[in-house]
Image 1 (spheres, rainbow, N blue to C red):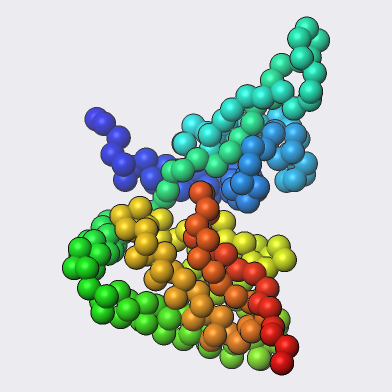
Image 2 (image 1 turned 30 degrees about the vertical axis):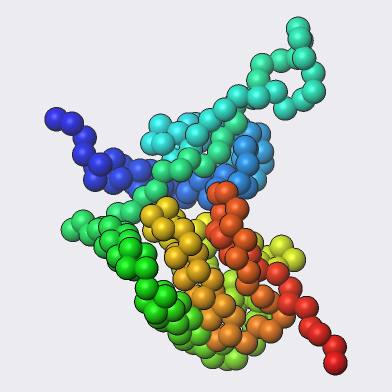
Length: 233
């Protein structure tokens, strides 16, 4: 009997139950570049052979892709064999039981708003997104007040919970777009919605030193966070 997509998703998720495999997957995903067996082994503090075994298990389930490249500048005889390198694949796991199709519903709604060509409906979408962002940011700020955390750390917590995979690098870098399937259906509409949502988070948290701008880049979120420039009067 042919294996269904649901069964393949179950098998992939079951593979990540192992802490070491999960750690390797998260490590490779976080690098956003090719990772060698040696590098992954050092990061997880395991032997190279053990890291290779689990990395190849992740490849078998199409969670990682591989390539081969010499890591030194040497060429010709004696240069050694090319190293096997690992990078996260574009496979997505979206698993619910019983199965739900929220992404499909979202795509239909986005296409309907886009097709209506109504400036009013697009403004309403951005307004709702900003309200949701402010609400989430305000709730996180209240929790921060009790724990006395930094505003930027509070913003990162909200974005992490929503799947943006944020890291602090001067500002905040978002490695993942949680709305990727919708953005592919209608990028201008979804990216503006996303920007309104994240600006709302900044307002709700109370992070005046951060600003969110729309700057689409391949393989990452369309919104970029940077330090806000204060104008002296």
